Image (cartoon, rainbow, N blue to C red; front, top):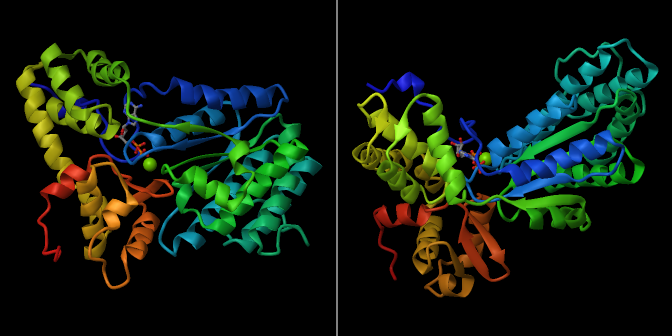
Length: 395
Ligand SMILES: Nc1ncnc2c1ncn2[C@@H]1O[C@H](COP(=O)(O)OP(=O)(O)O)[C@@H](O)[C@H]1O
Ligand SMILES: [Mg+2]
């Protein structure tokens, strides 16, 4: 009997996989930043872009780990599309900066460290103070205007000497970067820009939907040159095979070739599908040492049912009925990316499709890969959409 408590697979958003397969190139881009910084050379933060469930968050986590291993201070942020997200992400920043800066107190308080902590404390007062004790008073007239761009810049400027003194750097990691409000995003980009010019050891590294480069460039026109952009796509067959087989082998379990083929074909390189199908096949298998073709087929079926009950509705249910009609039209037009003209050539809602499309982009369900093209952000949502009951669309 296969033990469920030994199931190595890790289905679910942001759940760390047993093996992060096929991302050496992306990790290399980040390692490059770390080693260049150590050598006193300028480097660029990384921006990962891709569809939902392709593995951006877990890759970003791995980069964060590498930064921590190198002794860097790390602050983590997550953009949110709801209006309340604005205050939330500011509080995350203030709190994260305070926790990170506290580590500067460690080896005796230098005057640089005292200056840095006072600025961080000021920033905390201006942006939702949290009860992290820094042992200093807020700096007077420093990082306390309440204007994100000014305060963040002054904070980083005051942190830089203390970071340099200790041979370390500050990394701000931003997930769902397309959802960070323009004001804060602009501030992060301006400060990154200044940091490059002045040699402050401060870096932003981010992940988001395929429209993220456009969002960054809208916020600051120079953003396009400031980062190493990497598209995160489905895994190659070889990487997917490692992601499937290696964790099982480590637990003394083998996938029959037929069984592996069934799961790999069904997942088609998408990590969320691969983890879900593999976990379900494992849970189905009865023979202690082998996963058979029958286990794999049952696993894919169960896995698909799990995705249909959780992952897909998680996105689908965010859309209003009218928006769901539009998503259906996109799915029907081609499955993945379609011409806006085709999708919109239908009896429009009273206000026209443009506003529906805009709202779907804001909710992160659609993006525009080109000026007149529209695409779903969730791979295979089209197949799920097909299975949903269709209300009368009146055309
Ligand atoms: N390189 C990879 N190899 C194996 N599994 C992965 C890989 N990247 C992601 N996964 C798995 O895929 C799922 C989705 O990952 P996640 O980082 O949440 O995607 P995203 O942030 O792009 O939506 C998780 O179950 C995760 O364990
Ligand atoms: Mg994610």
